[in-house]
Amino acid sequence: MSKSFGETQVLEAVDLDIAPREFIAFLGPSGSGKTTLLRIIAGLETADGGEVILEDRRIDRLGPGERDVAMVFQSYALYPHMSVRENMAFGLRNAKVPQAEIDALIADAARVLEIEPLLDRKPSQLSGGQRQRVAIGRAIVKKPQLFLLDEPLSNLDAALRLRTRVELAQLRDRVEAGVIMVTHDQAEAMTLADRIVVFHDRRIQQVAAPMEIYLRPANRFVAQFVGSPA
Ligand code: ADP
Image (cartoon, rainbow, N blue to C red; front, top):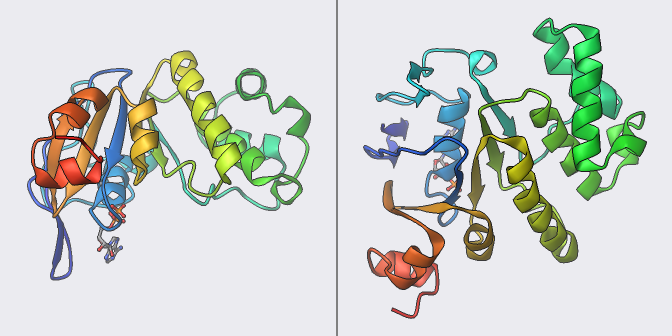
């Protein structure tokens, strides 16, 4: 697919296939179109052409709420006036999920993320790292086939980022869903992803496993960006 904003083309005929439950990192410099492609998959942005297909189903004409995906925003986008529990329940209520099921889904997610003691707090009473877990929790309760994470670690300090990186790696084993994570941080992509998609200059430069990208970068840009010895 392609995407322009006015005169500026951001994505040019990009094409990507990912496997079920794969952990994919979109890696590239700021402004290379990573978030735009993530938002197109989420249904928050419309491409100028092309298709988004999830398990044989074309989803690009469906609204964001009708797609079996869940996005975690860089800013977390929690509702400030709602408790953690209410934040996690909100989308489920709108989808008319029965209350007993909502309670069970929230209890499950809270246990996985170790946020049980926080369920009755407001977002303003949480640290940055706790807010981030709640944002992930809100995505988990939807049981999506695909998680879309927009720079999930960028608002955390260095120590917390490292810890959260470890937790994200553990999480992917528990959620049984695919993950696409946008990042401009090579180390993050290298440690977390099954495969890395390198963006630059409107195009996908390479799609490969971290070691492959490092040892056999497709071109000079990829080599410089990942600090490859080649
Ligand atoms: P990345 O996530 O790789 O940093 P983005 O996908 O956010 O890059 O942005 C790619 C380019 O598209 C940037 O030049 C950005 O300014 C532009 N862009 C993104 N969203 C919009 C928008 N809604 N309107 C106009 N330009 C946009």
